Length: 365
Image (cartoon, rainbow, N blue to C red; front, side, top):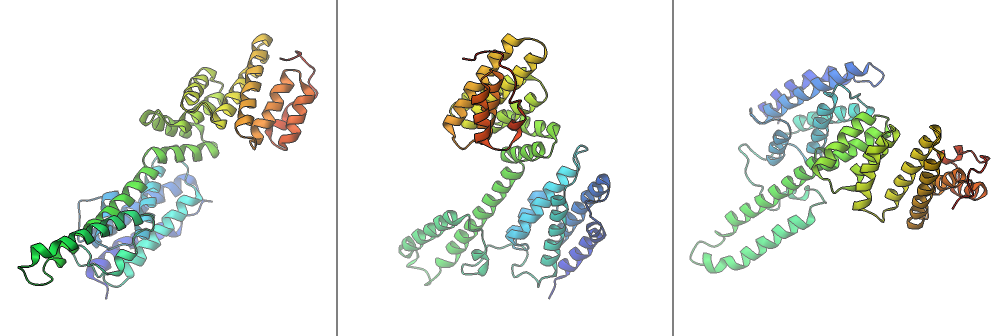
């Protein structure tokens, strides 16, 4: 039987049905963003209604519902993903993706399934689950160590308890202690899940993932914002420096690119990707010097690029990009035959655009 709170929550959720139904990536992106923005408040209203009203919102509200066992772990995950979509589409420079639309549909469907289910076994207000219930088995497989630790603690308390409880009724010590420990185990698992999701989506790792996705989809401004935020919070991380250096190089800001890549080299001097990015930096700056007629500076940078690409290939013999662009650097130095061999070895890629018949400008080092 469906409880009255569930019926009211279903009614609140139904306001989002037409919004979800018309989500289509082919529509104007601003219209899609507007619909996605409206979907979350309907979901949030339904969630509050399900627990009889609450001042909580967003992730804290999802956590409360999960703690009361009114939604499953999987449903909590997809709701957190929908919250992330809601936050992204409010940015004026963001364009919704097919994944955003899919997440909105899955979130709506997941909550609707939860609300149409039979009345939850866990009554309000929330009480810790009784040992042996199926709920404990549904906790994520990624937390076995935490649950095992709690179970071990429970065993330790149980073995020590008889000396204290011997004057009380048999079995008295088992109930309260077991309930408390089981409740603590569930709370730890839920908190760990929430912290992991938060860090991956909203913390520094979330910033890095967002930056990488933005860069891959041709949104350098968004990528720069994400990586800058990650770098400010954790200046010892390698990827933000690498990507900020790459973006600056793409934009022709060789001063900033050099600064970021120098920091990356300080963090991981023997990383193949760092050496490859330094090679790309010197190759690009050398080409810029060539354009303005500074052939002396160009040759110096082309030789520096060669050195860095050699280091990258030495550290990672499977790096085709480093092999290919090593060939380009050699060609720029006049070592055409040797450069062509490296390009052939690397196979097809952007490096094949290097002019193989460029006349030698220098005998090379």
